[in-house]
Image (cartoon, rainbow, N blue to C red; front, top):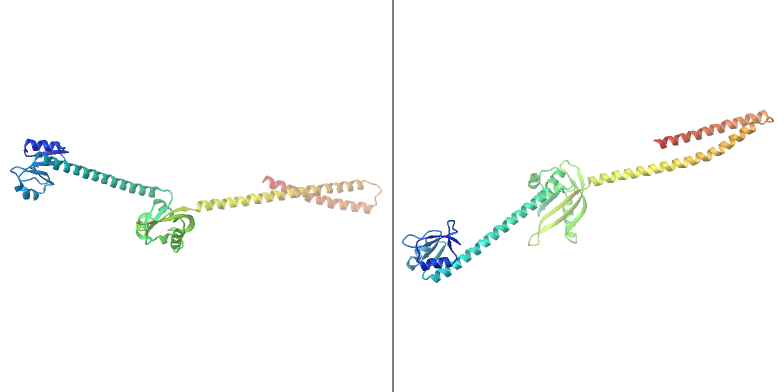
Length: 311
């Protein structure tokens, strides 16, 4: 241990001081004061050989008092005191290191909470919000300071009684936490937002409820995507139905064209006969006109189908 020595102790006492592990230094950890005619130095390790000065030394504010009757007594006393100080110093250093680690861990947890892309909030046992990270502020529209100073956890739910329902669900869960619990919350704007909630209850050392912490997952993108997929599925089904209808119509047109063509051809052949009565020829021409009209309608249906397919 580094020390500064005041006074002039005998050589055997000086040797005992050095044997106890003390070395003179310009940057001392302790002052050793060999008491002579002067007053004992406050805050020093005071060594004295006269028992008559004990009361004076004890009243001086010395950090340690050594009655130097023999060199060995000085050696044993200073060795024990130095070891005690080293132990205390290690303990203080370990305590400071532990406190620093705890502070660093708390800071890390705080940074993780604030930088998480997922909204996170926590409330104490009476429902007062104590954690409201930046993602939660962005989702709900309240500032973190306002939420933690003015809001109760029931204020964030679309139905205020849902706060109690969530707590019941947590306590009834087999492991004390819930995941993917579908519920609605209310933003500052009044909008009701569908979310999935993952939550648990933090207990104190006595096993009592201390905090409830929840992680929110906004379902609006998922629901919007699902809506678009449903609309696309319906559009595909309608397209398939239209395609099926077009195919059926095309088959019907083909089936109609064949007999129409055959009938019109037969009438044309009959009309070419010279032995037909005028009344029969007139009826054949009327029948041909009606069949031609039907053929025109069928051709019109075919044109509509081609137009639909091109669009």
